[in-house]
Image 1 (cartoon, rainbow, N blue to C red):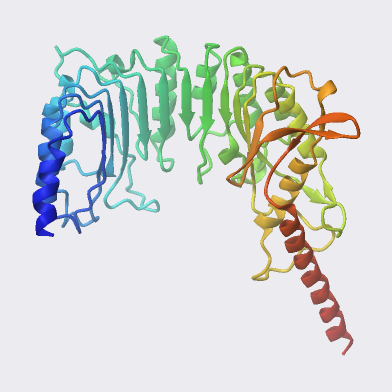
Image 2: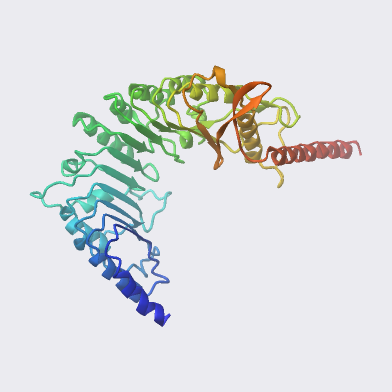
Length: 443
């Protein structure tokens, strides 16, 4: 240990050409000498462009990060990511707040915090306004930040006249509050309204709670390139119909290259359950008109097994989804997500047993369909090979095969035989259980 304490600090000081540092200190285990070594490094790197830092500590605050980050030495920063547990008294956040106006090159800011005593069920809980807190002491006569990318996770953005100047050049915005508080939707709608009237048109937008303000903003311009609706557990208090958002995306059909609504597709909203899925014809129709799409992540549900024969999958919905995206000339990647219980078993539900894995059965349905795809080359109007398909963290690549004198595009994947065996095993166990139950009743 003594040798490391001597060698590491000296070695770090030789890294003078570092442009990017990611540091996740853990106060319960790291000693002061390690903090000192990192301080010396951070204070001495002249060309540091990207800093990623975690300020986590235990909720009691008993073991906070004792090192003070030398933000004032980082004039060349263009990208800053800070995560942690928020306290208004944290000295590093106070230090950053006092010098943030000096970071004239800062273009990308990522803030992800949570309240140290956060309790989602508490009626007194309030959403955090981290960005507002960091900019509260920003000098009125200083040049505003030139932010192009802003990410706020587990915190909200309260639009005020003092915040607006820092967002004038914004092109990428990611807002993911943890839950809906009383002021969350009001803040979001005010934000979308301000961006609309100030003609701040985003290229990439990721958000958590869609509302009327977002719809109005999306309908006000037509150059969005990427859209993501993230997964969330709480229903939006200001309900909009999913088709309204899909139709708003049609305004951007000439520019939209990436769409991801998979996480929203598979959350149970009661009456709205499944209305975000690509398996709905109305939604599929919208996707079919987004002709510039290069990457899409979608949710599918409503798959049904026609019989008890393994591999007998009703694939009409999957066929519709696949054919919709195959018609898009620029698509490079299609990512498919399924709900865990998306595959039903006909007239009788399988009992809840340890060996019953509904997600695995759903995976069999999707994977079987993917590997059943055969596209004759002479029928494929695309000038290049088909897009890749990703499902359950596995990527399926297209390849050309010759069969009876004709060439086809097919998709390669994992060994399907194992999945068939697992499916057959589950069905065998189910039918044996049914026989045992029938015999028991007769006795």
